[in-house]
Length: 496
Image (tube, rainbow, N blue to C red):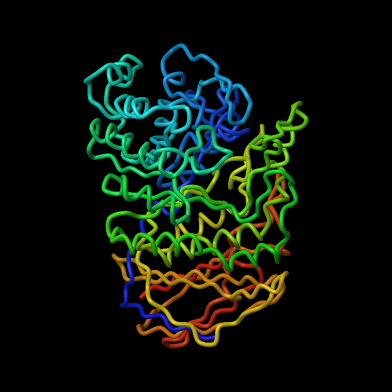
């Protein structure tokens, strides 16, 4: 297989927010995840220092919070101030102590140096409640809510720029689900009130790759939005926790760009492609396991609906299939970086997250190392490339997929090259040649792979790691020769 990379032909620059993350008040993501005041591993504010260090390592650019389905019955005022009254979370049917609220979320973002992205309650909440939340966060000292923040010990405004109106209010599972006409009117009035509080805010609204829903939304409120929010999980495990095997997951990479293409086409047709971008603000290969929670027939006992959520914590679930799939999706985001400006892996801690916490420390699952590779080794400018005679193979169900997924990037400051080259094949290496139209003096290859496609990390088991692959990349003049191990994610850096 041969590729040609045009090192001086920049297609567009990617926004680092495509490497964003997500936290929801579900299972152990917050309590026992990022926030555990009683743990000896936590700092004086109750945050797990090992988790903070791991988040800093992958330079998280933005975190979306507090949901997710949780937010559609969440009233933010109960989570601020000295007196926190526990609430029954009607989405997940558990009591939330409200000890982690807006102030703690801002603390978390400041500790790791990322942007906060707040998702508002568009289920049981009102337009006014959303704008009051923005008052609390962003006004200096005017009004009841800014003064309440000051009274709570936070003199300076938080300056939260990114806000989402609602979560998945198009879905019957969501508390406060709405029809397309109801939603478009609701978003219009919500955005109006929020922008009257802070005209500099950047607003998104819940959407999906549905023509009727999006046309109604954009006709009503398109001139007030900067983002349109879409979500995807490709291995739905809500009711049955039977994760797809490696080859099935590779088959699903063939449809990674479907939602992006549909929404791009709509934005183009409506003349909005230069003003509104896609926020892919919930995504993961594996859907969260929460049986009998969002169904008409609810679970009666906790054995039915609550305890099965512990199955999300089985670390052997998160294999090289998750790593390779996630890397392929990040490549898809890079290829569409002109229209996708933000994405949020859901979630970052526990459940299906990249980080797993336990009383003695953390496990960095395979997906964590994918973010480490991309954030710390890929560059900001996406380059043009061409593939000759691409290799393909069949996965279960006779789904044809490209064996190699490759994206080239360039550092806008130094001109250095970084190439993501993924070999999806489970058992066979691949050799490729890349023709470069400029000379480079040296190259370094970082590889993430495992002993098998089913390899994983767990407590006391760190078999999937990024390694320096000294034999994988060779420069011969302007030709780069690569040997890609099976089921591997590779980043090759070339310097002039």
